[in-house]
Length: 176
Image 1 (cartoon, one colour):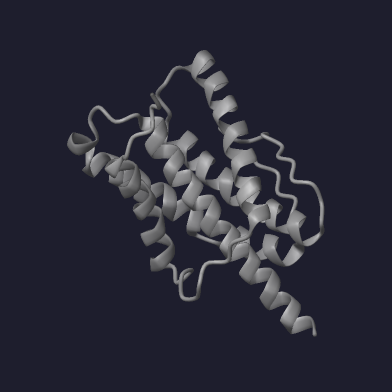
Image 2 (cartoon, one colour):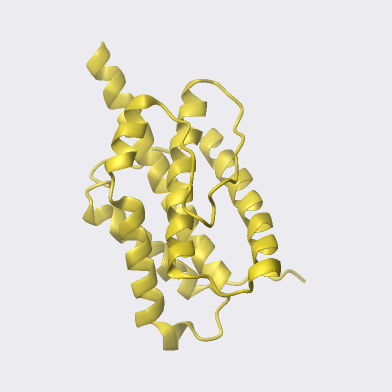
């Protein structure tokens, strides 16, 4: 027997992030995807779950809004790094520093870093996700909060990768 279930609330959490990207016009073109970025996502999410387990053991299950904000900013920064590593043919490794405290180092292409530092995407993802969980609290009762959060974080990572790929491709076109 497998424990896989269909989760309408997790799907709604993902949709919350997708709608955030749409409101910022990040989805005005087809989403950039690659096998390498999918593998990077898997590697990152597994490491994040491990870090989350340690965090829960030491700090409890409740995450503060600042910690949730840090998580969205963290996956946003890691997407920039993953795309940079992909274009530079470097191994995908993820430093977990800053995951909960917002002090996240960013090692990415200069053009990506410049645009990512001015982007409102992770802050809006945080705000919209926290509003979603507050507004739908009755409907979400009994749901695994980590499942909802990590579904939203996965979509933040995917769409942030899309943004980073777009930046790199546009920057390369300008240099040609």
